[in-house]
Amino acid sequence: MNYYKALKRTGGLLLMAAALSTSSCTRNFESLNKDPFGSTDKDLEADFAIVAAQLQQAQRSIYLYQPVPTFQLQQNLLGDIYSGYMMPPTPFGGNINNANYNLIDGWVTASWTTAYYNVMNPCIKAGLFSKQQFPETYAMSKILQVEGMHRVSDIFGPIIYTKYNQPNAEGGIDFDSQKDAYYAFFADLKEAIAILSPIRNNDASILFAKSDLVYGGKYSKWLKLANSLRLRLAIRISGIDQAKAKAEAEAALSDPGGLLETPDENFAVNIGATTHPLNTISASWGDVRMGAPVESIMGGYNDPRLAQYFQKATDPKVAGSYKGIRNGIVIDAKARYLDYSALAPLESKILLMTAAEVWFLRAEAAVIGWTGAGDAGTNYENGIRQSFAQYQLSGQADAYINDAVSKPKPYIDPKAINAGQNDVTGGPHLSTITIKWDDGAVKEAKIERILTQKWIAMFPEGQEAWSEFRRTGYPKLFPVVINNSNNTISTEAFIRRATYPGNEYAVNRAAVEKAVSTLKVQKDVGGTPLWWDIR
Image (cartoon, rainbow, N blue to C red; front, side, top):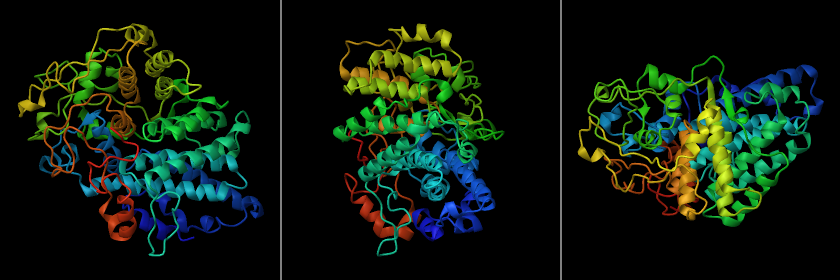
């Protein structure tokens, strides 16, 4: 197989790709299609090292930690800001950029190319080698492939997935519609779960253990991750494909292998001595600060986790308080907001899924009425407790859970150039939802309460938070003040997706245009809702 040819068509050249991404032409992977049972011990030793390295690369690239400039484009200037978590104080491009809906092609491209070069490609390679002789490692490759590529689909919509590396008659590579991609994700997770279930309590193979940067080679933890990811994706499509969502969710909820339950089971990729990329962007570059919704929501709730997420501002006008920046505002110079709240230092782990998130998924599944979900209120409270435990704040959880008074507070920017940047009490974008669970509340209020706390608990994983905001409309966020989308994105409806990279049009135009034709309004613009996005 000509991996490079397919890769060139699925994403163009990523100039800053990690060195391992270029290993497709090495001696070891030339033999990927041979029978591994016929390999010598020396062959396997060399192949083991490369397979493990490929799977490690995939884990480290789902949310890319190096090089930091690529991560900044892949995640920080996309999901992190659209989720409401963060906002750059830097007026990139003369203050005409992603933050105010002028989607910059060179920025958006990073999330596409990184996924194909650094996640999809190594997972495919590792899977081809390990499927027959090392099925447990093949299962890991499938789980990582789904975790990495569902994020890409949730950014763009239709993606190249089941037809990866299969040129069509025109020499391009066809896309899957987003529905077809999601169905393929479920099939891949089901296959991985079937492999890991009977061996979940066994000692890991050497290859599996070498490949694992999260759980120390524990099959049982990877099985829980697969079930949890299955539940996440089922919830994601629950509004548009109820029968499929119910079937997949109930399969995950009833699986004997279980779901992620406690912080020690969080899917957090160890990146060793390398600093977290957000530390570099915040502390070293000063290119990201707290988003206004964090100040409003967590500040209004007097949430003790706020000090774990951000530092207090040092600007004289707001010194000693937590101060965020609203998205899409007038920024004349970086100095205006540089001294608003920077991020608190993050440990050297990339957090991709937490036990807290899974408890909130269970809570929503219970509200929907799916079998095996348990009690919604209990799950909701467990989600808060596990999030507090994650930050060693368990002693403060009870008081927080029982707060039936606190609400998000208005956002006032004392340095605003445009008065429209402020949000006053009673504004349409300010939530009135409280913390304490109310079993007698209407369904929509229950969903808002769950999603608001889930949003807090998922920090700093902005991509997933943005996806959940688009799906549900929660938590309530402040719309942009400046909209530079040329009327392709509604200010009130918020941005719904990113546009396909220009390079993909250059090398695979017919397939891209066909993919666009499957979108709801058949327009490759940021205002077009995705398949699962019915808000």
